[in-house]
Image 1 (cartoon, rainbow over the protein chains, first blue to last red):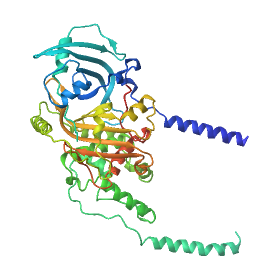
Image 2 (image 1 turned 120 degrees about the vertical axis):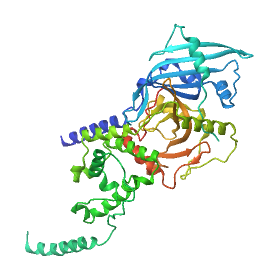
Image 3 (image 1 turned 90 degrees about the horizontal axis):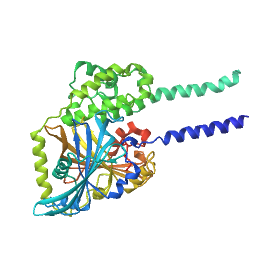
Image 4 (image 1 turned 180 degrees about the vertical axis):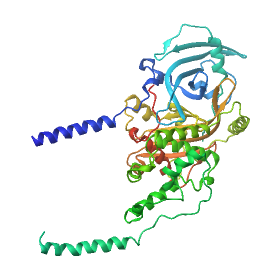
Length: 160
Length: 313
């Protein structure tokens, strides 16, 4: 009987401690739906923007072409550049008062440069909205969003 | 007890008493250096600090009789010495205004997380406990220290100056190294991000990157603990706030790295720390600076000492 109690309590202790150790730290609410395959877009970070009125935080990404253009501070666009603005709502950081972190996805805006010639740029804009990033059919305000995204300057970042 | 065993025990007790008295004369005692520049804070804040923090974090250490008896006194002495190094309200004016604010926000968060005052200290000094109403006083006080100006000209000027510097920057410099040997890792640019943060306590904004090992760990939900090989990089900017309520990155301040290697960085809970300041990537800190890093990360020891809650992509 004593042996049985020892073994059961040892197993229970191990279970409890392993559960404790494995408490997830992942920010699930702000995570991307796996079917969106965000990482497959192969994007790099250009800048980050907070909107204190809308209480949102966003990251502007670019594909390799867009990133290269940003790195040389070139104002001329080339076809194939892609810009992606990911916007989250914010939440108070549970681990640090004084800090806000992403809460839920609000939208993902994808702007592609289709053609660029003599200062005239042809673009395409796709928008995905909500936690599940459902494609949005609403085209109102598209031009404004595109202009807004293309007007952003990359943040100053360190390099060698 | 038989008389013979009593006789055997007597020399042992006598020896114990002699040793006990003897050790009272050795070891360092808590000193009381002069108060050179005490913190200036509202009365109700200062009262809390004096009651709950000053005994370890100031030069005005008030000791109980039992704190002064060896061997306990040795422990108290080393504890006070370390505490004063971390935060000393009697030498408050040795810090810059930004550092002072940072320390006070840190203080609030340490208290809110029950990380301070130390449980072992509270066990013998129950009066030092910080109750909810006192915590609110501290919270309102640190909040009163923040300011966020719209179109702040001095911040815009620093940003413009740095932007010019960036364009004229020359490539191929020597790779800078932190005092602990961790180099500046330029490859972070090719990593994915795991989170962002708006820090209204310090008026900064951040992006936290993870190397491919970190992204894999997030995908596999293996972030507590994080596996060896994971590197995180955090970039910090000042906030530039405009009249439309938008905040964008202003002047670039520094990059910080956390590298997971359980064996190599055993002394700092398995994490190697490094920080490089400004665009010239000046290594931050002196020898042993990493202890001040892990000291703060102890607040989140239950999540493998990492504040960032990573976003899965």
